[in-house]
Length: 451
Image (cartoon, rainbow, N blue to C red; front, side, top):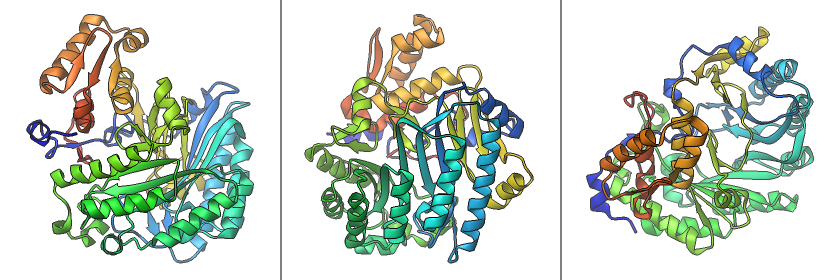
């Protein structure tokens, strides 16, 4: 499918680019957004509107070496219980400022490991959330579940609270690879978790799997994907492992000489991709796959697929509010992020104020360029008519932008009066092509390999 010499010539195997779950990306956030701005944006949400809510739980029983998320280890429940009390206090602050009649279109618990909460803490947290806003019609409540950190009682609590979608991390089923990345999770453990989830009537299942891990080969990738397919997840995220030991110190435990080359990473991705397609999954954006009846597939077909900090979504809410340390919120006016350190986050909430310490206020061409990048990441094309209608750019100016990007990627794009489209064989270049529409300084840290 992919022509490596052409992709190499265009820099695919050398580039470091954003994943574009936001625009501008988080490294460009500044102290211009604080608690007062955040509170004003909450107050501007229309009465009776629908919002998404993300809850971040930054604790884990063990710290996986491959993970670059902001997490902290704990062997006791005391810090977790204290953190839940802080979450409840933040939710109370939110309730005081949220306009009347707001409902939740999506509720997602992420981390970290949300499932290390005890059943009682899970119940307390959901009650506090629904006191702020109830689930709306056709709402979805999803939770990231660690198969090593789940049991019948906790699943009973989540099911009773209304969880409708579970998301499990797999990474890789190979024993040597698991040992090398510090994530021991056998297939039987994962299968048992899936069986417990489905036994409670929760049939929507997400799974994450990684390519680009140390010691991965096409044969090992094939075996892990086939084991994952036997669990029949509704959607799969096929993420590329980002080796950034200068940012995530625990990754220094992973031998860099065992990592596949960028060219081999592309082979690993394509090996997994073909298996998912052969099994009937639809290809969603740059790294997701979904069953034909899944909401992501329906959104792709209807042109309503969106991208946010959790990846691809069919959620159409204009507001995403993140609670918990380091969580990021998105409003029509811009982005707001809570203090990343749990201590600073807790101190602010206990002082009776939001912990917002940075963000970004949309300005200039931010919204237009952000929408163009989102279109490329979701649909591999930019709808010229929508951009002209929504942002008032002239056709001459828009075509000039298209022409400049087309020159930078010769033979990889189709340009016409209606759209700019990435050719199928050039899909691995999507993030690089999206970067060409990014008006910000691209030297900021935090970007990952283009493949």
